[in-house]
Image (tube, rainbow, N blue to C red; front, side, top):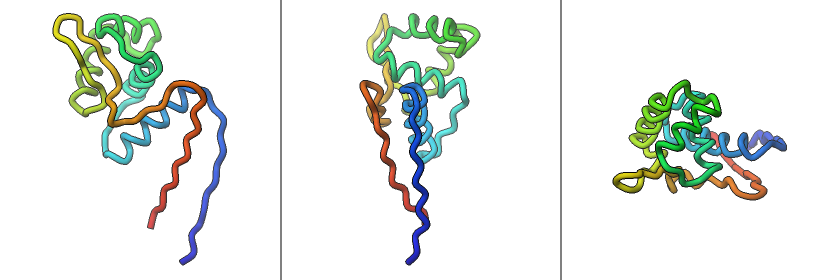
Amino acid sequence: MIVNKVNKKIRTDIRKNVEYQILTYCFFNNIQISNSDLNCLGELAIVGEYELTDFCKVACTENIFKSPQSARNAITKAEKKGLIQKNGKNKKTIIISDVLNIQSKGIVLLDYKILGE
């Protein structure tokens, strides 16, 4: 069997690295996300666990969403898709779901090997 191999090496910042990991997970799990959703998830993956209301404000100041309510709606949608976990009762915190296995701290080398037949 002849295998055509594509080998690409790219150096990027941690934000792009994290967003690529999220996109890859979503692609292989048939999960549709918008660019705003991707930016929101990337921000959350980098900052880690965050209080929900405060994160919605951050998403607005970072120009990811136009209002805190838009951010909250996107977070609810991502939670339903299994991309975000909410914890707590009164002051809820949010964090990227463990199932994504996103690496966002330190120097991260992604080494995917994907065979398509």
